[in-house]
Image (cartoon, rainbow, N blue to C red):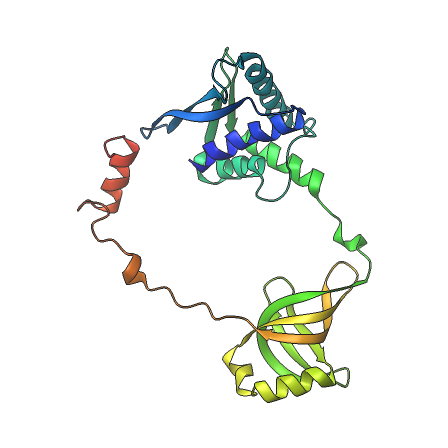
Length: 260
């Protein structure tokens, strides 16, 4: 179903880029079949009754059809298409490559686009090439902000009092502490927290090395990150979810359309 939603989002992107003053229609899911292959039919309905929308819908379908075909042929990427990570077109290609296998979009009037894994690979590669950044060209720079991480050590960095945090994005980072921060940090925390893996938000001047790697942080403030409570699996498990069927039997009947 997510594949269908992202496909419809492509129409919204194209419509916005066409520069229309106002939206004249919206997509309504008319019917869906869970039998293999999974099929969904969407119908364009006018927002205002009795307004003629067929010409605009036809133009929009042509724009999306031609845009997708151009990408999977390794040609031009439409200017209207969002290429950010997890964008609709990225999602459509990635799902096709990772499990779905083939996605077909019927634009009507004998215009049926089939995106198989080979086509999705070409499309995804074209977008990746378009959006790729050579990080080796990024210069040294400084910025002010906050980085979240887990405290793993306390000591000195370049003869300055410091703590070390482990971050998801940059790995291990040394954070030098000013006298004001030491006084606050020293009175509110204990060294035992180093070994307990306390999660912190470290604010201050962020120094990036060539290539975009965060090298160190000159700390102006530290705050504790709220602990995430453990999930109680017993509270979300539903032993009657499959109505007594095994998981395999349940999925087979769902795909065949035998379950509501």
